[in-house]
Length: 183
Image (cartoon, rainbow, N blue to C red; front, side):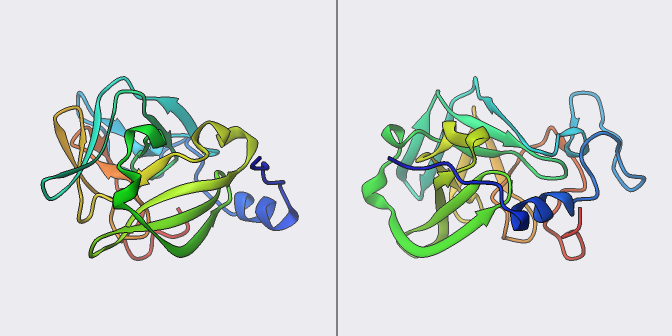
């Protein structure tokens, strides 16, 4: 059985350091055009929600993941991250890298590579209770993999650290670029 993580003083301090929390757009945020949504309207703490559209990830011609039962996480200033249930992922194609990261909102993640692509994916192996629905689910970096929301290709979030999927309806700026770490 996988345990939920406890909120420690260090985690609470990490959660408290964020300046923007989705209640008000900062002066430098772009105004959304019709049909767009501002990443500055996404909440912090992040929100987990089901995705109605089909999600796909391709490594070259190889289908790594496809689902119509996905989730996405919305967080202030970031592009949404999309999660796939393990039964809809070609898990045998992925190799655990030994890298681990701790998100102060979601939990402890294990990193994965795919062939020459590293990082390619991650999976939360321990979560805070609010994100237990995606424990054991996989998310993919769109920098070198082809990721799709419906038929719309998704690009990578700036900077390479975050795994958000950038699609045309998003309005930013989106965190990840140099100087945006405090957003």
